[in-house]
Amino acid sequence: MARKARVREDLEHHPDGLFAQHLRAEVDRREMALLRGLDNLDILFEDKQRMLDFYHGVLGLPLAFPTSEEEDWFAVRAGDVEIFFFPGRGANPKLNVVNGDENPPGIESIAWRVDDLDAAVAELGPHIEWATDTTVWRHPSGTYYRMRTFFDPEGNKVWLTEPHRMPQSGRTN
Image 1 (cartoon, one colour):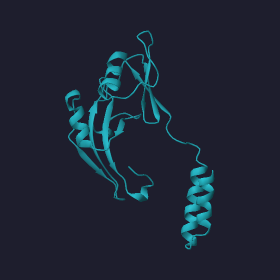
Image 2 (cartoon, helix red, strand yellow):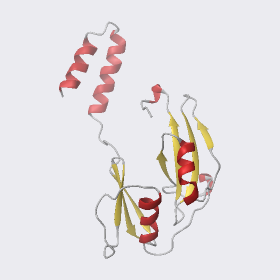
Image 3 (spheres, one colour):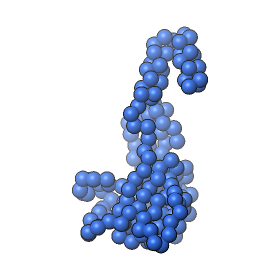
Image 4 (cartoon, helix red, strand yellow):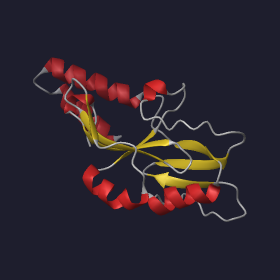
């Protein structure tokens, strides 16, 4: 709270009143945000061991909780987000289509942020069957992403992304 008070005080005394008003409004907006961040994701699986081996073993995500063979679920930690894996029921509708325009509505993919896409591809390459070569998506703001696609053992589309965000997008790498 002391930091926020200092920011407000600095804004009050800033020589550019309009700029100060804009920053003050941004601070107020962030303080009042209802959704504070992504907490967790749930992914349903057909084969627990295969998914555990991939997400924990190959991708190297740490377990969020101890797991055992008797339990039918597990969770890994990805930064501040926990990903829970639970058994699914029924047929798994395999998407396996890189172009999202051809997939049905719903969550289409998971994207992992990496600092160096080329290094990540080199490290994971022997363990992953890549669905695409490296591609680049550019936004008119100047923000762009270098990315590469693969599918996890149960057909979920996964991306590795190397984001290059411009300051006006409000985020940094």
